[in-house]
Length: 370
Image 1 (cartoon, rainbow, N blue to C red):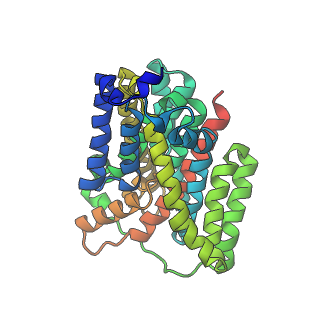
Image 2 (tube, helix red, strand yellow; image 1 turned 120 degrees about the vertical axis):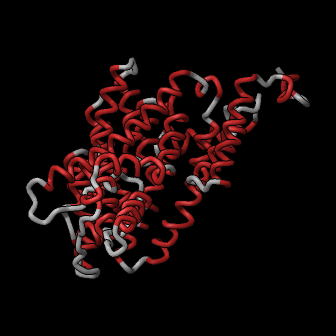
């Protein structure tokens, strides 16, 4: 075998499937740079796909750096949970605490997960594969990666690409669904924000601790995800570890995301990625994303049947976990309908609720699927 690793073997032994995957990696890099689609992850994933499809690449050999990163960071779920520390440190739960009803939208917007699991299972995927596909609907990359690594590691590449691609395409995917399910009058409904700064500091400090205890008691399998998400938030809200909070938001999140991206890209081997099942996974992921958006909107419209003070149903669409993109999108759409209608704080409240809801939904899937 020694001669296989000589000069030009990468060119001599390359297959057309590997060539296509190298092109796919190039497309991901193009989308990251030229279109600014989730560049922090699509760029390293794209380059990792190139590294992983060069014949006899030392990067993906058994002891190569990408293989090592995969084993120590993805196979044992370390990278996804570490990223949650950074995400938690970036989130301000104030808008949610000031208007707790927004938590309902973070739950309702997870409907697409379970609907897609049912559809995927009916289409021939195993229950665990169907669960990993459905979880794309959380619009939460780390949760998708964790569930995929646990249930369907052979599908990790397409599942990860689908999750982060659809997150970056929020401004394209969500508006048509929102317009289809709402009327102009509904999109103009005003939602008053009661004022920033009403939440006592002690409440903001106790909130991440309480959420961790409650979620851990209900679904212990969620402890790693929800616990480290809330640890990051506690670093932020404590006010005494600014350096740790800043490091979690910047150095930790950036380094882990880089390693996560190239490790995922390196796993996108042509033999796994270039199949009809991969195309079906991408389609089902889009279905899950659309169903989640629709579920949140329809739930908001249902609540309005009973509420004296109506909510803008677009808030339901912000209940997915694509933070803060979805919240900003909904706010912008409200302004497009009425330039004096500012619902940004309510939208962000629903959006951060979606971050919690996605983790809980992922934990339920991990707990219930056997």
